[in-house]
Length: 289
Image (cartoon, rainbow, N blue to C red):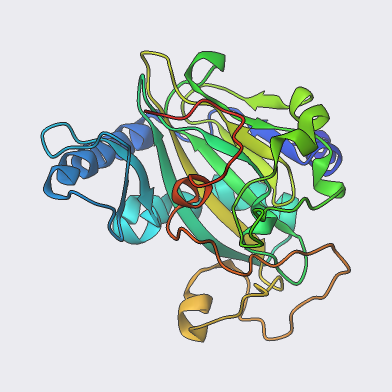
């Protein structure tokens, strides 16, 4: 699925976009599942273990901001990350032994899809080494108009910025005044539906509100080399190993000297990244009403 040149670009920039990895039939199945999940949100009035809701959500007009851990919600999402084309790409970028760290489905609906402020994923889940990346599966055609993910090339090898607020608690975002130059250099991850972006866990990124009349649903997976262990610990060893995508069980973490800031003290507002970032005094993107 990718060439050696693509691998070199990923090593240099910390991000690549691979065109149309998912076929049309799979996209159709995923869209049907998403439609059913959104319809099911009519039965909830607040965030749940499955739903993170947009501001303005009502049972009469369901507005879903995120489906949490979709690989546990419906088997099609687990099927995608374990598919041969995806494993082939991951093996070239991370190596032959892989573990799924987590998943989420960010749903930027037309006209109101919420933004995500500038951050590095590494701030949320540092590991013993940084052979960790996120896959962004474009479930809709994505261009500048409907809020693409923006990633700043090269930031994966540099500073790990503070994601803490003035009170010292984890806030889930970088003060935009500290990264103005990096923001100016950011590039959009765009493409046809079925394309996938792959960005390094330390790459700075964010995305604006979707003000277009088209949706921009983005299915995200976080994947690590299996010898990268989360510094916040492993609560359930069997569940941890159930997320292996390739390779055998590993009990010897690989330690690499990489900069780390722990996400502690924990965020004052728990939940999704949207909830954590919502109490920040500074924001870069216009927020959904």
